[in-house]
Amino acid sequence: MGISLRTGTMMVLDFPTIVWKMLSGQKIEIDDLSEIEVNFVRSMRDLIMRKEEEFEYIPMYWQT
Image 1 (tube, helix red, strand yellow):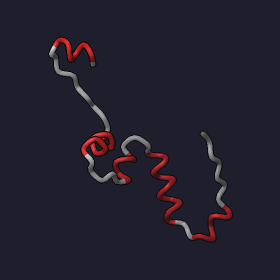
Image 2: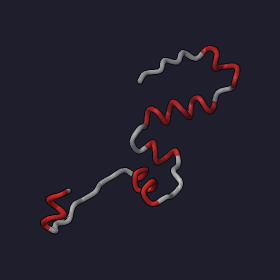
Image 3: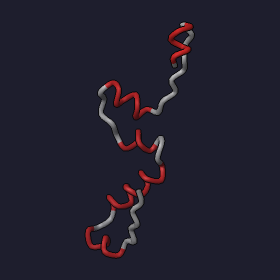
Image 4: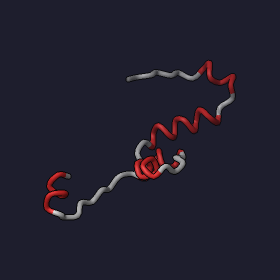
């Protein structure tokens, strides 16, 4: 990025949609996140569609 600024050459910033929306202050939607984390969005949509009683039987393992 520094070389691009010093030499005046154009640099391609190919960020996902979610980054551009955050920079421009637009509302971020779940489809923006699915562009970079498909499995996470799929899991969250599955949890949203479940009934409250079903949560007792879902094995959930959290990692950091």
